Length: 423
Image 1 (spheres, rainbow, N blue to C red):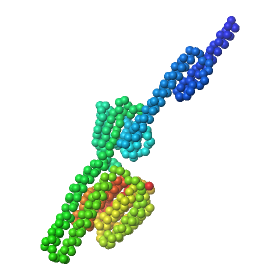
Image 2: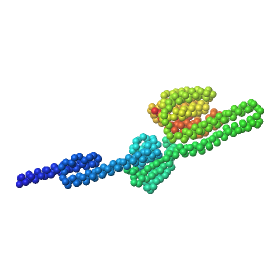
Image 3: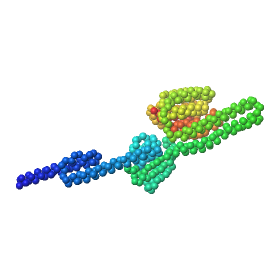
Image 4: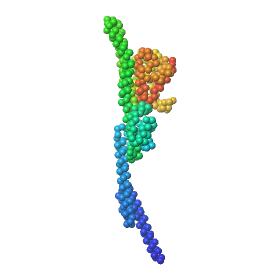
């Protein structure tokens, strides 16, 4: 009996060892199949378990092949979306941004890599726009593509034509919607530019053109033989022609700035060096008005920035201060870097032009940057202004994502402050 029990126990132990080895070998084969590795050498294994091991290994290899195929499909999705030239967002069913292609990342001003979420403050503002949000909801509810026109007001106005396309079946990452953007800002700005140019030119050029025609008719008629009158009238004609030239140049310059305002500038500009150059060029106008210019220029670099446009900002503000300030007065030009927030201004670069002229009543200040808005039309024209200088300043500052602040006290003078992002 004892010998029988011992034999039974030995057989059970041997069988247990075989089962343990079988299970260990089965686990190794399954892991190797799942990881795409060759199967390890097979040790002792029960015949019945061998069939299970082979079936399980085939199943694991099939699952691994399917996972590899799914990975290739995901990479193909990502490659196609990433290479499309138009800004494109992939949204989940709850409206979350799952993916943004390179064009969308550039459009919304973020730099995650392919496959990263493209969610930024600008993206969130875009998706919260009532027209866009409504199109997303309708596309999910109806399962049909939706089209919507929208204007994003910040940081500068952008006209967008947007397509919201439902995906059935969804993408491999769960994407349920494609949002495709087409930026129509420049095309529509060109349309507005043409209309505004015609309207403004016809309005503002009417007066000098009428003066030129009148004096030419006088020179050809009653004053034909009067040399003194001829000289005086020709001088007036030349002044009016020069006024027309400056008007057209400012209108064309303003139109160009407006067309490119939605695109951030590139490069950087030493604002103190630009201010010094423009101050030197102001010498004839300062002499004509018997005015003095005080400079306080600390090293300051604006970035991103267009040096030519910022030079025009300084020139227009200085001319405005000298022409409309007090004759024989004093103009102060300063440039400095803000290392810490100052009032409502974050760190950056601050340009300031101040005069001690008659000042401007508070009700006029909100309209100073409108085209051809003049507090005193007669005095403005007599000073040689076109009525476009501050409008140009406003649009250039907007193009640079900056701020323009105007503070004036009647009888004491006016201060123009321009904040720009700095390096």
